[in-house]
Picture 1 (cartoon, rainbow, N blue to C red):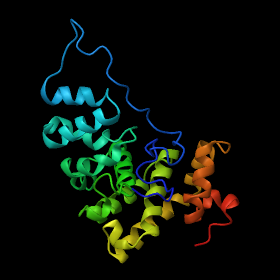
Picture 2: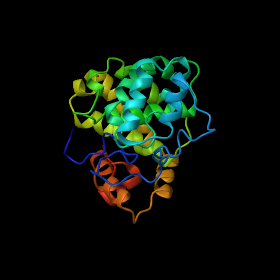
Picture 3: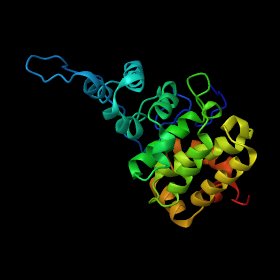
Picture 4: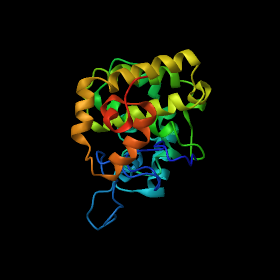
Length: 246
């Protein structure tokens, strides 16, 4: 796993203590309480795995999500594509398995693409960008160029939010700070998709959204502004990082 302090394997509180948790994420799932009580309805099969995945955290969640990837059935595919990497610091162990098992490349380039799918794709890519030593990274994910390009294209049509902004910044920070082959791309593919992301992040409405949504006194703001934003010279943080000229 990278030790250079970058966001990587996950910014939604997924950092394992490496940087302050992002303030705009779904809370981590709670451990199961009261499971198996007399009279309680107990789901079976794939439904039982989904039921557990919504209620366990830590290593328990890793095992349950990996079980869903191995054979949760078609009913689990929508959940894997939209919820699997919500709010757990061990996402790096299974994000790549989710992307592969749920056929993310087909879903994000298909006709049935909604905001939840686009947002979760951003989370998966941000995790896979920096989970060396944990799980599958972008350089070993063959559909990476197509998935990155599709996500950047959908992002440009979404309403700006803090979480979308931060995920995209983490992805493009990885793309621009490593050789193209470490992102699973050619140099041309990497440069094109990085420019797509940066064009969105520097739009006035996206700059306004992240400035309004992040607490300037918070630890995350300080880390993000002086780390990722400074490296990328993001326009929203130009007054703190010395300009946005690229």
